Image 1: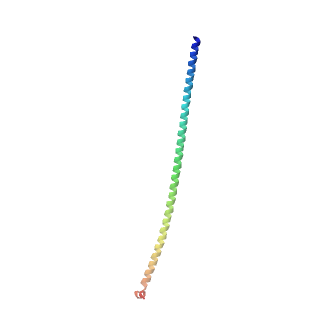
Image 2: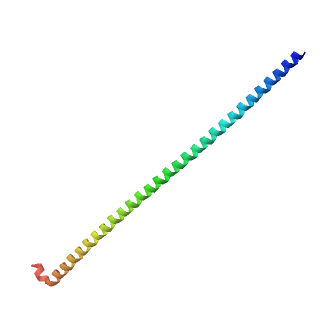
Image 3: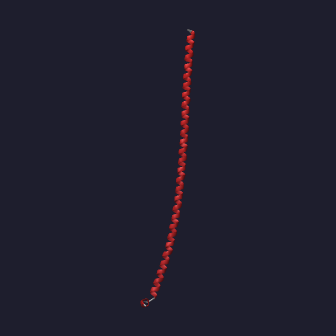
Length: 112
């Protein structure tokens, strides 16, 4: 009977140890999963931060480019206005000269 009792105790002892091994493995498994999830979240946040930085840099570059094009267009318009002003002054000068010529001649001289 004693042998049987020792055998039963040994079985319970092995079973208890097996349960402990399973429990430890489950805890380690949960810890590994939690660590992997945490690492994944860190990488995701890092990737999001990088994407935002790249987006912001692209927006800034586009704004600078647009500002440059606007300044360039404004300069072209200023030059065109200056050219138009010169043309208008020239036309006014020609008109003044024509008026002087017409005023200095008589109608009879123009008809002949």
